[in-house]
Amino acid sequence: MKKLWLQWFDNQQNQVSSQDAGIAWSRILPFVFLHLACLLVFFVPFTGFALLVCGLSYFVRMFAITAFYHRYFSHKSFKTGRVTQAVFAGLGATATQRGPLWWAAHHRHHHIHADTDQDSHSPKHGFWHSHMGWFLQSKNFTTQEKYIKDLSQYPELRFIDRYDIIFPLVYMVLLYVLGEVLATLYPALKTGGWQLVLWGYVVSTVLLAHVTYAINSLAHVFGSREFDTGDNSRNNFILALLTLGEGWHNNHHCCPGSVRQGFRWWQIDISYYGLWLMSKVGLIWDLKTPNEVLLNKKRLSEVVS
Image (cartoon, rainbow, N blue to C red):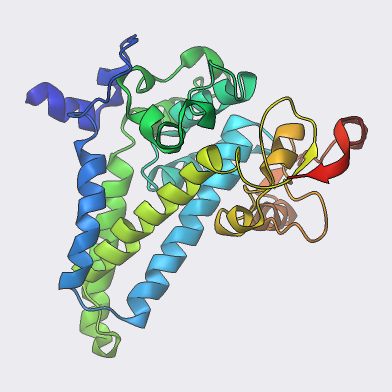
């Protein structure tokens, strides 16, 4: 039992080479409980304020995942300072999608082997496997160090990656305190600590998680293709809205190092808009844009579905 608790709180306990393709049931119990906890919303008041907190929590943490876990840590599509990268690494960890090093390593591996037998989460292995089964396997709990040597030089990132579960727990505590304070100061809101924990963390996190997973499972199956990328990536307008721009997945696989994934004016890319604003105030810089020569070289003669 002691080792089980250590596995939940210290990812160093999971850094063991394994080829076990089975589901690590004891290790993923918190993931299971998180989904079951959604049922508890029926035992707290439902209010417009709770829904607002749920939406804001979803938006802010989705931005941390898409703009930093993905576009920065995985692809280095811009530069930033250590404080900013650490802040968004911690904020991204509150989304409960593991730490930035683990996330970036697996994503870099995906781009090297996209939609081949070696791709851990290609839909060719089945919908549920690509959606979430792959990261529940024992063999995929290990951070693939060889892919993230540039990131592992930072001790603060290694700490966040090793103890990533701390950040959702702190986030829940902050939401609980906020709910209790607001209940005292503004009783008309009809809120409370547990209400904000359930809507601001539990429901928001589950929604955010499955929308993120859908990029693996759906954006390689449904949508249109404008570029020949050697894989099955698709542009999907609905997923682009839900993920703040990640749904322009065929674009992304064409130019993975681009900070912008919506290449046309009508391809809404909210994460890019946020990053552009951050660049204007000096928080990030050296934003990489799509390579037009590469785009023209890979552009298909007509868009296909």
